[in-house]
Image (cartoon, rainbow, N blue to C red; front, top):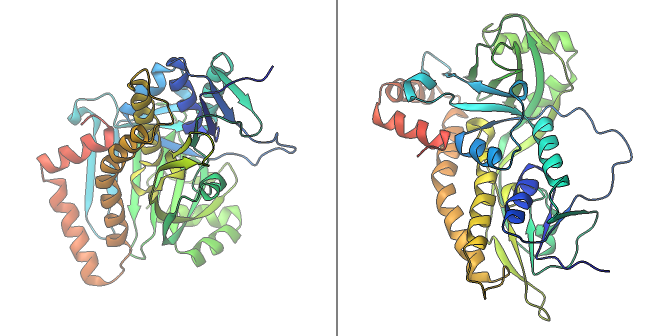
Length: 376
């Protein structure tokens, strides 16, 4: 006997599974499309994300927050300019237990997968099914977005990201560190393996030709380059995983929702990286995606009993809310990237002067910290 679904979610990553669980709580019947089964082992997953208090609260409400060894609290953040500018954020000064948590993506996905397995309102399927509403959570390279004709405006950055994992000579001390170099590259060390750990996840944004060169280095030479770029902050470094690389971009869909076909009332809507991309320098990408699905689930749950989940007025309400929420973070992230990508002397002086001023700005620094932590 064929099942009838209320919503089909295309994309079963963190964003898609979180949305499926949220909608299931509202007694909606959800089809979660995972795609064809993998026939060979996937490469090692080095991804780690900084999740804020809002994202943690959401995932805890779904009983999907990872164990402590896979969710390291950040007690301090240190940002180093390309001269003597520095900015520091401290959890104790903000009156919070952590500025963020660095979460292993594979561990988080495993918890979400378990939660979905025990949720009878969610059915995992291998191919898209008919439903009044299709939610696209496939990431920035979404084919379904193209299928539905959603225009995606992309502005490439002159950077590629390199991600890997490191074992460090010194413990990380629950400090997230970031270095802006004179050549425009940006290096981030994110603490892993719990409060006493000495491992970090690396995200290194560099020029495309530099990314090619770094990928070709043998492990010892690559480690030496990382140690120099990090100013020896954690001592000797040793890579413990593969090195992955991808181009960086700022992007946003012009329209986040629309109708499908003319015969039956069906609609589509975008969420997460399928709707928007930002530079990773602020570590807000997954937080923004989780904010999307939380807002979408709330809008659908609050609809009138007679209104379909495919009603475009509901979906446009979600679109307006999220575009408004994303605007400040998108402008700030793009502005910082543009400022630090200019190697000329006057720009160096301006940005380092700005960093010093911001460090002592009081209310402005407090406001920015609250925005990033999701506690505004």
